[in-house]
Image (cartoon, rainbow, N blue to C red; front, side):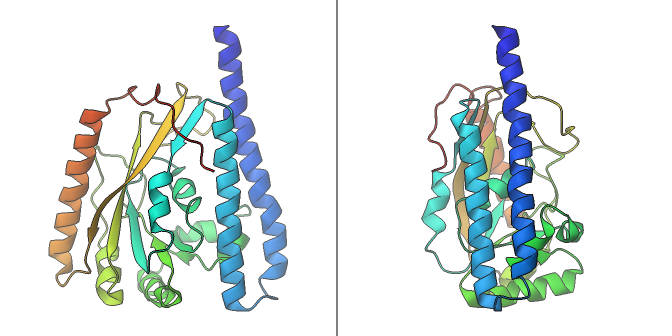
Amino acid sequence: MRRLIGLYDYLVLYLGLIWLGLLCLSWTFIAVILYPLLPLHLGRALGRWVIMAAFRLYLASLSASRRCHFDLTALDALRHEGPLIIAPNHPCLLDAVMVISRLPNVACVMKSSLMDNVFLGAGSRLARYIGSEPLRNMIHLAVEDFQNGSHLLLFPEGTRTTRDPVNPLKGSIGLISHQARVPVQTVLIETDTKYLGKGWPLFRKPVMPLTYRVRLGRRFDPPENTQRFMAELQDYFANELIQGSAIHPPGSLSGIEVAPPL
């Protein structure tokens, strides 16, 4: 029975990755055609909605296996909010997938190299996602995008967490919030696994089931002093994540049943 469960876990993870790849690749072929044809506002709205729907379908498929659990309902409270910078911690590669799966009008700041990725590039360009480089252009595009009433997904660590509880934060989030006069909504992602964290091999199977929880943290007003703001944000994330790990030590989330991301 243990071997059968282990085999089932491999199928869930790797068929899931193939399924996500097929979803992204299918949309790539369509997005390439639509990008020059649709007006900017229609392309942006359609592109963001389709990415949300595809990511939600992927997570729902994993949830249906009963080997992965996602509690993401806290993010639903943000759907009808005005412009916000959504700032989560970044434990793994699934973080952006989880956040985007609940929000229909969010621009994502992503590594510029991914904008040319065969799976993600065309869809991200249609959705008017924002490349992280060059920095000045990224900040300009992010500030401009808020005029459409959208949210901006920006991971303050800049990369996946390598130093518990949180990496040193990048100052760009403070600059964008200051220039755009848009508040920063912190998001705390809690999990009992290191799966797909920094340095985790893509085809290495973790201990399963996997559980992820998202909760809304403090909302910070646009700063006047960005250096002071970044220090306060760093302390906030560190304290919240340490407290969260004390309440939910490794392995404690895996037995909790949570609702699928419908």
